[in-house]
Length: 277
Image (tube, rainbow, N blue to C red; front, side):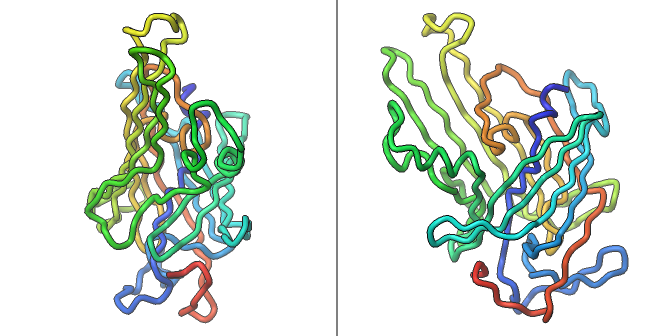
């Protein structure tokens, strides 16, 4: 269960335009949803509730944690206005909070966090040149869905014969079905994150021929206009998105599925907001 405590709501957000001509009328528990159409609503007041299961050694602990996410206002850095996502993760008697920043451009959806914003503004880090750590990064492109794209690629070559690297990539896997206890979502955009890393073994850092290598993935399913309805994969991905650096050899697998939601409706139903491409 140690892996679960790192789980944020990895709201790897897929926003599309607010009033596309082909946006269907959708229903959730009998209520018509217009939202701000697209694969994830971004209006203040949205609430999502999730059950988080932990899977380790073939054993599943269902309901190991619960997660409640809310859209609460905006955050501005320079000329960029982000939507703020606050995530409340409860495990047993303990509750933790995460914050994510998202915004939409013509290119697609970009994601950030308080930690990433701070790291990107540091003037100097050994082995890292300005721009290696982005202020935010593309999580899903609009134009080239059948693609893989780089999110983070940091490499150190200060140790002879050992390259240290941390890489995060995104990949769009097409349209998939997401089956949850709440209901089946038949048409979902499926996005995969891939984390690869190599670094010295902390137990014996001088043994350059026995480094720790990590290759972990997690998949995220978005439907319109409810947003993220299912995420499953390595806890390392969730830790990385939260702002931590995974350094262990193995990680629990996590399944995070929607159990309830409240989607704020726009007024009027067709709106044009500054962060809508």
